[in-house]
Length: 175
Image 1 (cartoon, rainbow, N blue to C red):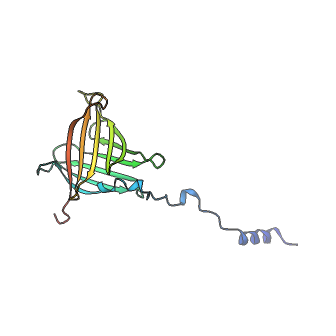
Image 2: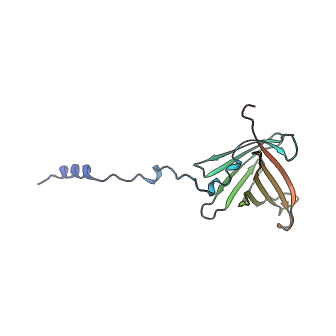
Image 3: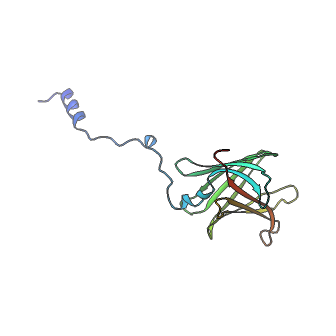
């Protein structure tokens, strides 16, 4: 007859390896085609109003967290900065951006890729226009720069006026 102690030792030596607990597994990487749609904006940039050579900001856009997030650090030269957190919902394919600046509150945008351009729209209320929609269109230019074209609507998107127009030029790595 085998003793209880010998049986326990025998069972320990013949048990199958246990699966790794979920909290110890590495998170999945976000490498789908949808997760790469906004990669053209990732980089270190000098930002200028379109058609001008007077720099207004620096911007650092990084892909983070296994490719699941794109984070912008907006650093204007003469004003307060802010940060945007961008991600795509893998279930719907809709992109979301949450902008948090130096003033209280946050603004949320959503949208997606349309004709090779990232288009995000959200309600950005102001003291003069409490129901102001902002539509931002990001497009890769032939020279490698990125245009961020902003339009505002105070009539729920029936008409749009230019709000801002920036060109993000790649920083000179030797500067």
